[in-house]
Image 1 (cartoon, rainbow, N blue to C red):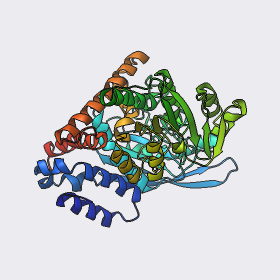
Image 2: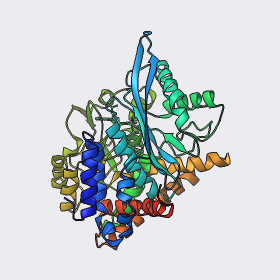
Image 3: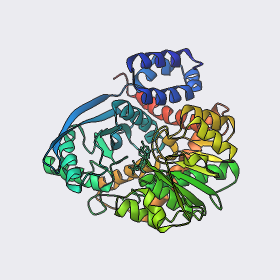
Image 4: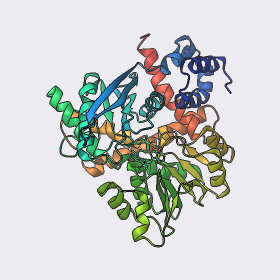
Amino acid sequence: MFKTQYAKQVFGMLSARNPGQAEFLQAAQEVLGSIEPELDANPELTSNAILERITEPDRIVRFRVTWVDDLGQIQVNRAWRVEFNNAIGPYKGGLRFHDSVTESILKFLGFEQTFKNALTGLWMGGGKGGSDFDPHGKSDGEVMRFCQAFMTELYRHIGPESDVPAGDIGVGGREIGYLFGQYKRVTKQFSGVLTGKGLDFGGSLVRTEATGYGLCYYVQEALRRLRNDSFADKTVVISGSGNVAIFACEKAAQLGAKVVTMSDSAGYVYDPDGIDLAAVKAIKLDRRGRIAEYVDAHPGAKFVAGGSVWRLPCDIALPCATQNELTGDDAKALIANGAIIVAEGANMPSTPEAIDALHAAKVLFAPGKASNAGGVAVSGLEMSQDSQLIQWSFAEVDERLRGIMVNIVAQSLAAAGDYGMGEDLMNGANIAGFRRVAGAMIAQGVY
Ligand code: NDP
C-alpha cells in the first residue's frame, strides 16, 4: 500500500491508535499515499516527525448539549470541536449537524480542512465540529434552543483569532444566526467569530454561493488547461440539493451546461430538460421541503427513490451531498458513459475504489479539498472584511474567489509536475497543501 517506510510506519500507528475511525483512516491513507515522493525528497520531514504531528489533532473538545423540545421533553445530544492544526492560522472549519456525526467523521473533516485551507493561500488552520443533532423536521424554536445550548459550551473554546467555525451539512444561515446571537449574549462581543453570518451583521457577499460557484470555477479552469474544453453544452449530474448542490447547479447553468439531476437522502430527480433551479430553491430554501416535490410541477421530470445519479449519462459529475456516496461501481458507470471529469463538491464523496477507477481510465478527478475550497476561501475573505469592519461588493468577492480557484488548479498541477505526475489533481493538491503546513510547522519549532 505504501512505498516509503515512514508513511507505512505512521499509518500503522494511526490504525492501532484509532480503532473504528474508518473515515479518518481513509482520509489519512489518501494523503499519506500522495505525499510519499515529497517525504523521499525531504528527509527533514521525517526527522521533524511531521507525519506523527500532522495526523494528531491539537485537541478535541467533546461536550453534552441539553435542550428542551416543543413537547417540553429534555433532549441530550453529543457535540465536538476538533481543533486539528493551527500552523498557518486560526482553526477554521464548519459545524455539521446530522445524526450520522461521529468523532471519526469530524476528525476526517478537520484533517482534510487543514490541507484545503492551505491551498487557498489564506491564513487559516484546520478544524471541524458539530453534533449528532439532526435539524430535519425540527421547528425553528427547537433549532434555536439547540443552537443556544450548543454555543453556551462552545463559546469557551472559540474566538476570532483562535478558532472560527462556519456552516456545513445541517448548518446554514438560520443556524449561524442563532449561534452568533448566543455567542454575543454570553461574551458581549460582536466579532468575526463565525463565518456565513447574515449580510446585515458581518457576513460576506458570495459566501452563500461560494462553495458551488468555486467548484464550477475550478472545473472550468481544469477543463481549459487539461482538455481545452469548458462547461459549454455539457450535461452535468449533481447529487445533493443543499447549499453546495444548489449553487453548483446555478453556476454550471450560467457557464452554458445543462444540469439534469439533484437528489437528497430519499432519492433523485431527473429532468431531461434541465433542472429548474428556481423551483428547487423554492422547495429547499423557502419551504425546507424534499426534492421529490419537484416533479409535482414538472411532469417531464421523474423522481427515483434511492438509486444513484452516477448511473446516468453525463459529461461532468459533481458529487455534492456527503462522504462515500460515489462507489467503485458508480465510477465504472460514469467511465462507460463517457464522463470527462468528476469534481467533488462534498468532502470525500468518492471511495478509494472510485478514485482508482477514474485515474486508471484517465477521467479527470478533482478532490474535494481542492475543488470545494471556495466556501472556506470566502469565509477567509469574510474574516478579512470583519477585521476591517467593511463589506466588499459581490463582484469583488466573486472575482477574488475565481482567482483563488484558478490558483488552486495551478498549484496542484505544479506540485504534480514536480514528481512527473502529469494531470493528477489529487496528488498535486495533497502535496501542495501538505508542503505549506509542514513548512510552517518546521519553522515554528517543536510544539
Ligand atoms: P446541506 O445540509 O445544505 O445539504 C446536504 C445535502 O446532501 C442534502 O441534499 C442532503 O439530503 C444530502 N445528504 C446529506 N447527508 C446525506 C446522506 N448521508 N445520504 C444522502 N444524502 C445526504 O449541506 P452542504 O450543501 O453545505 O454540504 C454538502 C457537502 O459539501 C458536505 O460534504 C459538506 O461537508 C461539503 N462542503 C460544504 C461546504 C459549505 O460551504 N457548505 C464547504 C465545503 C464542503 P437530506 O436533506 O435528505 O439529508
